[in-house]
Amino acid sequence: MKTKNWSGIQKIGAIAGVALVIFLPLQFITPQIKNPPVTGKPATPKDVTRIFERACYDCHSNETQLKWFDKIVPASWEVSNDVEEARSRFNFSEWDKLSKADQQVILWKAVNAVITGKMPLPSYVALHPETNVTSADIETLKKYINSLPNNKPDNDSAAQVSANAADNERQHYHGESEATKTIPVALNGVRYVTGYQNWQVISTTNRFDNNTMRIVYGNDITVKAIKENNINPFPNGATIVKVVWNKIEDKDDLIRAGAFNAVQIMIKDEKKYPRTGGWGFAIFNGLKLVPTGKTALFENDCFNCHKLQASDNGYVFNIPLKDRELDIK
Image (cartoon, rainbow, N blue to C red):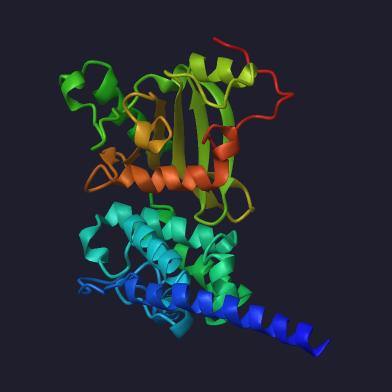
């Protein structure tokens, strides 16, 4: 009996020895996470900055602080990949490299990801409980994001703002001022879409996290694909236009459209946009329809968000209910 027990102990020892022989050398090839210089940070209030620093900076900044167990293989490989991907989406330490429009879009996305519990990653919070975001933190972030200038109604009435937006669009696609030369184009080649107002409305949505409301239009190819449930994937040529207005809630608690905010576009072309699920993404901001992004890599942020939340719907948000009838014009 003793011999058998001793034999079992020897086997365990041998397995442990082999594991150490494999495990220890791997620690010398663990990836090194470098922290480049900080060039600029968001000018956010102190309470908001503290939340970002605690919950986001380990991945989305050049101020990554690793725990001892983050440096052990194989965990270190995953941490390194997560940091690299997070910094590629946005980097709080290089905030000055973004346009004002991009800064606000990213703030909206970041706060929305926190509110919906997608960030920080639950698996990361489990090992780093100090990064957990409380309900009080969420209220602080909501209050801040709703205070941003583009979320406040201006002195113009909603009707006047809408008229200004319409005038601007007419200059782009009805022949005034050599329209074909002035139609804006995103850095990835997606052009502003003209005439979408005559398309089928496939959805309307509210974003309570950033005080915006949207109307979503689809061209005939999109509507037909939805009606026939041919959305995984959507066919080439499908085009979706989402028009965004800032939302105003008046003294009687009635909600109406405020200032024109942006036009967001998705165009399906698998040959032209293979890196982003076959979709070309673009956002044109404000009445001047200024394209989002300083480089074509802006589309990665769009696709990553759609991939995370809408992969079951061909990477498209706001698909109508299956029992809803859509008339193809």
